[in-house]
Length: 116
Image (cartoon, rainbow, N blue to C red; front, side, top):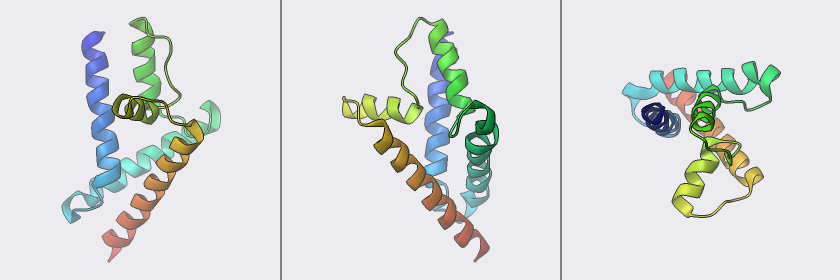
């Protein structure tokens, strides 16, 4: 379980990194668009039943962490990252708005650049 937890941390950071940055280089834009489509599907497809902005990866990761005995888990992995780096908890609505803003901005940039 501990190894799976580490693997899921790495996967989360990689997924967020691709989502935030892969639009920049032309060679990674197709990957970026696939990742963004997966996020949209999770947030607004599965989210119809699980709650808007549901993240499948976070759900799996939090299940593993609960099995490891961790109980005070934040709503999102972004909250976990910010708390880990900043050393304090920021308001959830602020983090959710920032996450959505970065997501939609990078998606729009990727689509415009991919099509040009």
